[in-house]
Image (cartoon, rainbow, N blue to C red; front, side, top):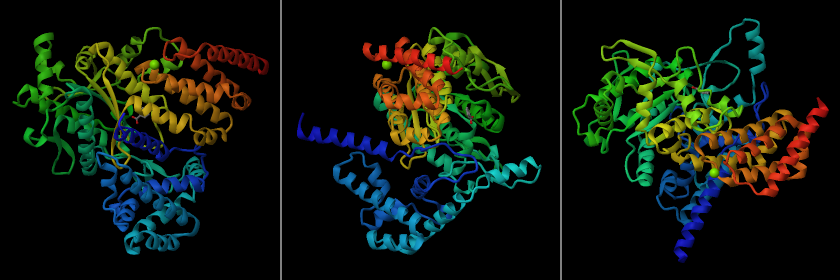
Length: 574
Ligand code: BEZ
Ligand code: MG
């Protein structure tokens, strides 16, 4: 290895370490009615301060600091294709000043923070003032919690004032909490901002796919959730539109009810076919949006364009020719549960260990989600008619699966819904396309809208949360519930093994070392919640048994011993 090569590798490694360090994680559960502690507040304020806030006339603090120091734009530092040590040092210097100024703000208030920023980084007071006014308002609102009061008033049947539902970083106006959360008007989705951001995410997604697979995906399977599209005002929806190469068209009442075709010359790439699985919540909230997506697919399928530039048209033509199916069937792309039904049940099947052959998980996904929505060729509403064959045929052409992740609060191992959806659809594709699709997630919350493979995301979540003492000690402060949270992270990780095999062996090995082979930790878990401790060990043994983890024999023996010990303990207690 040359010195240059070595330096490059060390830097790449260093960047990964930074990424884990900087990842914002919840360090404990929200306790209803209680305000977040200073440390947690500081993390939230830092995230809020890292974005431009045009609505408050405020600019992102890292940008102000980088400019004040004469380093140019912070975004440019982040985006430089090659991260040299000089660049990283600049980034770190900016991050350190941002962190220190916010600590000072939390400790001593706005004035000292502004003065310090001016002295340390030549940030003009008048430039930073709007941001700090916003941060002060957020801090005050974070310190007053109306949740218990709101609940009591609701129970008395009194009026609760409404407030928007979102992520605090995306929309600080969600504060104060304890109000009556309201969602969005589906006709406003996607918003202009969501659509603009989606262009970048999609171009990164396609760049990543082409660089790894050597070509554009013939078709992609997308997962769209309701709450996420509320929070981002439709970023996921906008990404689907960009993949197809269309723009939402607003009617006289400013409702997004149509689409405008983006010419191929402007798009500069083929139109990608998309098979969309939307959640039951999305279906209930975004009926108008499902129509918009269906309309977009139909509009693209009608274009007179060369097949190598219009994959929707190419796939439909091929399908009609090869499978002899009708156009009306071949064009279906928006799928969800039957009306009134929710979820894929893949999570329940995994959690209950109720399957023998992995492909059953993909079949279950299709059984639950093969109901088509939109309008037919004559404009008649299609509201959830069973279209299993259409969905299966559409999935045969899928080469990549994808979901937009928009929040730092809930990651892919925090809940079982990510693997039931993205894992479920990936398994369904695997069984029908006869290949393993590439699986990608975006981090649309981060400033640079990163695309990660599923494998990378599992590693990052494992290091930032499950194996991070800051995270698990935060959980363990909650006693019984905290152990259940740790167990649930391990089970959700296992869910990714079951649906996608995207979990490295070291993940399970380190989980075993951290929580079970460490005698002191095992004693704590067993005392606080022996049931969850037993499930955790059971899950590790199952991961080994199903071939997801190559564990060494001694470790396995010890795990079995611990499992039996916990069984005895629980039976003795019961
Ligand atoms: C949704 O927002 O659509 C959703 C939420 C939780 C689980 C699955 C979907
Ligand atoms: Mg493996």
